[in-house]
Length: 302
Image (tube, rainbow, N blue to C red; front, side):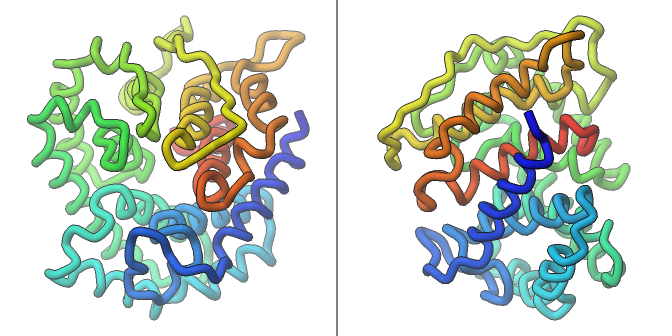
């Protein structure tokens, strides 16, 4: 597969999402300073994250300039003030805020930024998200939820964000909760409303603690499903198809053949309706999931 062509297509699809003018759906727009136009606030946030990292890894100075013109100190401070207002304490907690943390970390890798603001904002989000994980760690039902408040995925995004040592110690203390139900997580099958394939998330969480085992394996018996008539009821299967490929992004290609990651990705990309189809169902989040897999494959994040 031509990686450059894939990245170029993703860039255009995600940028079209970011600059949309349609009103948000279901959720508010935060401070309304920058994360607007997409399907919802967190979709705009991870669109910014994806494009920032694409710009950095492809040396796209024009794209970087466009993004930095949006992510000004003034706009970020407005979002920070909004999120810290007492009446907004539940806004996009935890999912959107975890993506925001990852975006701020990526933004800090680009020049011409107020590092003091970014560092302070990141620390606040780290504390908020770690506390949320701790407060919900006693419930196996929450940890096993792959829907709209995916405990395991929030844990993983925090790890991806390379938090301060104090936060890492607190995350390590939570691993015992994961171990208590490891077998259940490792064999969990996604519900129709789930956005994540939990065995894949568990595998990646394991990789944040220790080097990969010599024998590559994770429990994965989900058959790829490609429903050509996606709806709000079943559209998450398109995202799950991508998530279940993420661990394979760590696998070295077999000599003379492509990796399982790219073979699976090729099948997904051969069906545009499954990754850049109807905006309200697919294109505001699945392209970003594809890009996250490519980031892992390139040695980023882990």
